[in-house]
Length: 244
Image 1 (tube, one colour):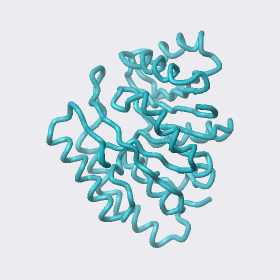
Image 2: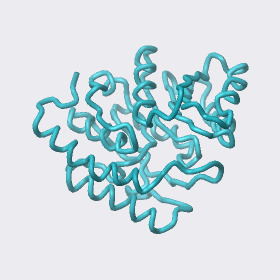
Image 3: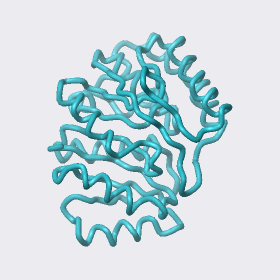
Image 4: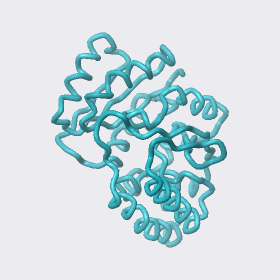
């Protein structure tokens, strides 16, 4: 996995962070990790600093003063990655809902030229484990709604397990990404599609976290549902809405 960077935002992930770093590094000697920690009061950043002692050339940490939003964390990470010329930039959660081993499958597809590779719960072969049925339905129909409004050819529009090629991120005007919560994931895929880049979904098994507390809520889905209309209107009213 040469020239690859995995960006992992964290907030109170002390139960998961050491094992996550270990499992990602076990996939390839070339892979690097950037952790963006939003002032976790549980000591997550301190654990990362201890891990950096033996992994100073592969493990990086940016500390922020508080919870500033998922989208702003990833955009900070994307800019950091572009400044250092990484070719393949990944998003993933720290709670093992995204299987680290599947980074290899996303990478393999990206090396074929696919600009955005999505680890998908809802494409053929994708699965969800340990979620209550109400949450599954809420997530699934949120993605259905997004597709109906945007016509975007992605079944798992809110997925947060993604590989981006450098070429897409270089063309994207980050200042035009308006969402900072989980709707950010929808807008990134929509921006890639509107800019003419190829997207592909790879089926994964999404497993709800075992350790730590979930950050998901009904408010997150509400943000995504209401924001999609605004996002669609912007793309229709502004030529090259996301291009630099």
